[in-house]
Image 1 (cartoon, rainbow, N blue to C red):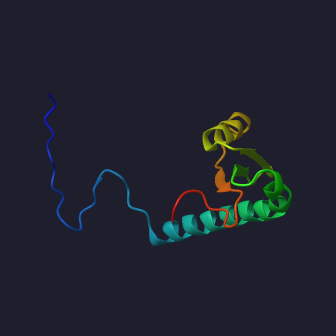
Image 2: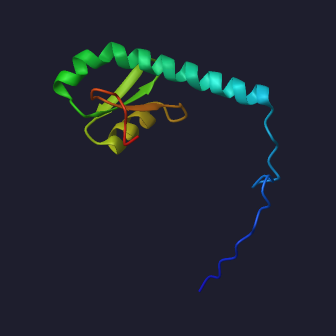
Amino acid sequence: MTIKTRIRVPHGNPLFPDRPRLSSQEIAQRKRDREIFAQRCREIFRRVYPELVQKHQNWYIYIEPNSGQYFIDSERSIARQKAKEKHPNAVLMAMCLNETGTVGKI
């Protein structure tokens, strides 16, 4: 049997003190990068949505914005697998071919 031990971290202390803390500029830059990435993916989604939603309602779409390619399937894991086969190291955005484009619950 494994015994679990709880380590109490005092309030205000980092959970992982070994990791370097990011500067506020670095945090802001990462946020801008994420927003630019999402904007590029949404642009591709808006372009292909009208033609795909007619035949593939509620299917999943994975978008790779650098190449402009997208991969769709009725099952999320298969759509992701198709995208990762073609772009193994790329960051992808998952969306759904429905009214809102969201995947999962908010």
